[in-house]
Length: 384
Image (cartoon, one colour):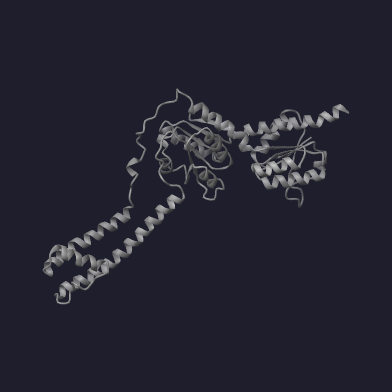
């Protein structure tokens, strides 16, 4: 009997395939106060335990507890962390360790290689109506507005004081500028000026101080915003012929490693600022952008119109499809991850991209490993 632990789509797909082979299957469910659902009676009856939850620590914990209950129980464990997988494989006998990302990433990478090496792929030009190159050096409109208002205050005021105080325009401009900047040196003053000129000077001081305060606040905000953009990788990609990978999860990281090994230049887009893989990708020399890839501006930062390929591997089908539609607008081929087999088939039929239902790919690999483990269980029985 095969025992399957896990409540996600992968566990359900594994169960479906094992049942189709005619093998008896049971699922582990929470039992009483036992939150992890480890039923000792089921463990003792099982020949193979499949731990398919997306939780390395939980899977390891269940594997060790199950092995204490039944030392001869064969284990098929889902793990991503390579160090943990290596340690478990070396310390526990009769355990098979699989990673969904390492099962499915080679499938995506192989499809990417075929597209990148395809000489019949359509040639793309660098000019597109949505390219957005005119926004490359777009300045902050509020900051520009404040600067314009400051100039409109300074230059006409200099003209007024050049007439009122009988100064040259340069001297009057110098006086107004030092007044607005609140650093007047006292070499030119309004002490002997008329009351109207003094009132104008007072108004100039107030307006100048207000404008300078606003201007420096806006300038500081602009500098901090640009600095934050640099920290988050939100700088425009200058090259062409690169591969854009959307999603820096386990699968995205594995695909990036495989394509980087082929010498491909990569741009990574990830929405989650807390992604544990971003630092790894940046240390490997890849341009990683922390932003929402469904926004056209983000794809423009990644130079979508000059990319050779887009690989969308987020965990949400709708996001991957939306990115594929953006890529299709500029005639860039796209490979996407899909959880839904039906949606994956529809996308491929319509030619909106190459879609893979990775749950199916992973479930088949797990099911094959289960059959292999059962064969190892049956072999000693047949020889006795």
